[in-house]
Length: 375
Ligand code: PMP
Image (cartoon, rainbow, N blue to C red; front, side, top):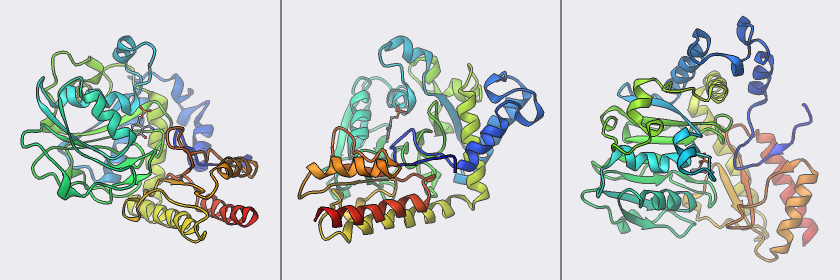
């Protein structure tokens, strides 16, 4: 319907039609309030009910224990704008600095597991704030064997990226770090499967892949980790300020929070995260089977044990020239954004929660046809 394409973008990414229709219906007059969500005071009872509902639904979906705060943080904090006027986007990237600023003091050791581009960036930013120990560096196609990890005895936390969006490397279980505080970047697989939040000190995720539009970053953080920020922490990045003011220290990204709320409500209606995971596993299997069944025409650069359910990179090893052709022919059939990230090349199909099974099946059919025509 609506002449929509199958959008395999890594993010901002596809949203459920049902949610977009709801937003459309609400656009001029949200639930009889006489105004759109974009026009409401964030201090009014209408918006309060929207943010409370979004938080309640997210808490129910992830079974978030009571001793964790849910923060809806700005993608573009003023403070970051001032510090770095040429790179105004905050997003999940602003958490790369917020985490060391809130969870450690100057000179502390900070452990980072590096499995791809995003965890490398997070570690790079943390070096400004502490002594970064790289626990292990992956080969971009697997999770390094835990027996090779060099955890520091005194690290304030262990940071890792649960799903590397560019490489398509995903942890299948949380890393085991003993009594250390575990911090996870779940930007590209947030709410794609049930997660035991109690194993984590902090989980963060930009909204614009699985749960909504760009503009808001979710932070789920355990109570005992709040309240020890460094004095130099920008107020907008301070978890205590955000927690005390219920994410409303200043004007929050109201529209983005509203959209996430609609997505959370739909996920609950559809059976919660166990159902979401089942659907995602099915979709990923269709694509990985298409690669495996191509007699080597297509290849997955990732080891089977670490293949992402969300971002599926693949190449045409015998003739990389054909990759461009693949992407352009697919686009003519309304399957867009299949080009791999500019840093790694090849193709990448991002198949987040809202990508329908039909889109993945059509892609798999096209892969088969393209391989046959190119042989
Ligand atoms: N972490 C991961 C895993 C990501 O995929 C991204 C965005 N692609 C980021 C962090 C950065 O997010 P943002 O653009 O919201 O800063």
